[in-house]
Figure (cartoon, rainbow, N blue to C red):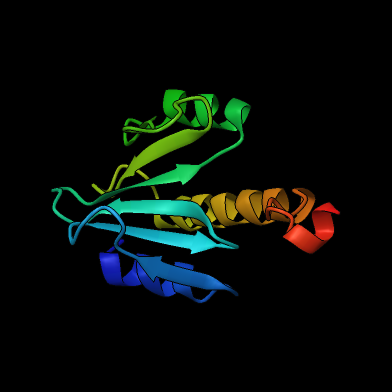
Amino acid sequence: MTLSQLLDHALAKPEVEELLPFGPDVLVLKTNGKMFLLLPLDTDPLRFNAKCDPERAAQLREEYTGILPGYHMNKKYWNTVLLDGSVPGVLVRQLIDHSYELIRATAQKSPSKKKPTSKQRK
């Protein structure tokens, strides 16, 4: 899978925004203000970090050499996926979908964390 194919798939989802908060070489995709994909653009092979259910994350790491504990992430919940041909494209798309769905579900369950205004505190 190419970077273009990966981005086409991820950006087709509702309410996804692209950001470069860590500099020009790291693309972050967010939904509801929370990151669901992190893509270092200066790596070869191309790779990305995606959130994953902890049990599934561990299982995938055992099954595929191109799926590793999340680099610079909470390794319980994040995987790094190498786009070196060792992970089938269908699975790559499923992992992107899974990460997106986990973040959307979390955002919908979380109450708003906005600070109360002075009128609300009284």
